[in-house]
Image 1 (cartoon, one colour):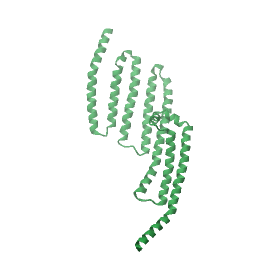
Image 2 (cartoon, rainbow, N blue to C red; image 1 turned 60 degrees about the horizontal axis):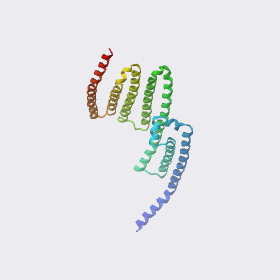
Image 3 (cartoon, rainbow, N blue to C red; image 1 turned 45 degrees about the vertical axis):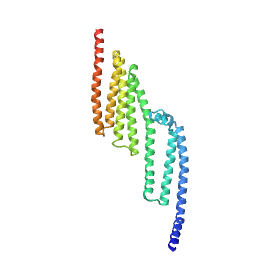
Image 4 (spheres, rainbow, N blue to C red; image 1 turned 90 degrees about the vertical axis):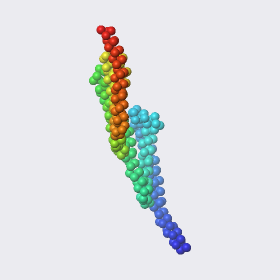
Length: 278
């Protein structure tokens, strides 16, 4: 009986001794939450008033955000609120003295949140800057080409945009510690495919403008070039998987043979037409 009484007495004493720390931790969390709410609303309004959201919505990433139902100003405000609140929770953990796995886990979240916020901000402001630079360079390049060759300036602008967007994504992923042997090939593959589509459209249009007779096979040429860049991009994406790479190589050979067979009637038709004209 005495042991039970001593145990209860010690437990009550520990609870009483911990009350100041618990109250302090609660106050810190409430203050952090309040500051986070105010900062979040301020960040939300700042993004709207500075026109960042409108510029961002015009970019490729911005349109993707819109389609998924995300709002830039609300996202930035929510991230600021969460960041400050997590800092308060971390301080509260230290005040109460929570240790072990739970304490380490919460501290890890608090340490990672600034990286997550920085990565998101890099993507947001980076895409806005990329869109602005690509548009500016596109306007600078257009006067250098004749009006009938404006597609070349557009092609160069698109290539620049693809490269800069890839750079921004890599920088953001590195900041968020999400880059690695899987992410790099993925981005490289999509860059190759995007650049291939842009190059194909620009080159085919330029050739058909200069050589009208080429229009009859322009669709076939586009299909072939699209397919080639798609296969190369897929090969880059799955470069770290030897088994998949071998499958893509076999598909490439089969595709090349099929294209060669399809080319025979087209070449025959063109040769027949040229013979009639002669």
